[in-house]
Each structure stands twice: as C-alpha cells, then as structure tokens.
Amino acid sequence: MDIGTLRGLGTLLVLIATLGVICWAYSGKRKGAFDEAANLPFADEDRNDPRSPRA
Image 1: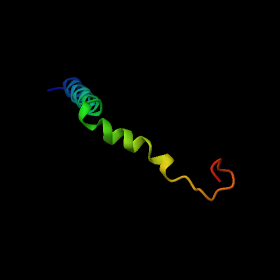
Image 2: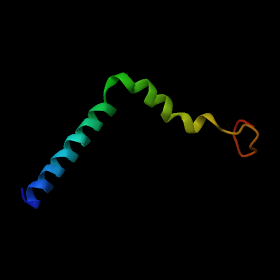
Image 3: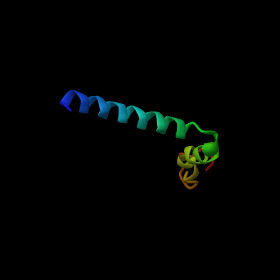
Image 4: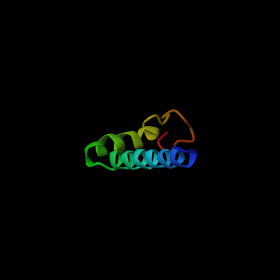
C-alpha cells in the first residue's frame, strides 16, 4: 500500500463521515430539538435593559 492509496482511503472515510453527519442533521426526528436550540439566544434577553423595547 503506497501513500496515494492511504490518502484516497482517508478522503473516502472523511466523505462518508460528512455524509453521515448531514443525514443525521437533516433527519426529521430531531427537528424539534434543533428548533429549540436555535431560539436559545433569544431566551436570555434582559428585561431590565433600558435599550430593550419591552422595558
């Protein structure tokens, strides 16, 4: 096995891992958890902040 074969196998492994992560992220099972996590930055708004429109 030469270095070119090892590099090719490494590239194939990274491609398979990337496709696996993409499939996992876009699977419908976890959509609710991702939506909840996406809204976390807005959950900690300081209501005592005078610059806040709700103050």
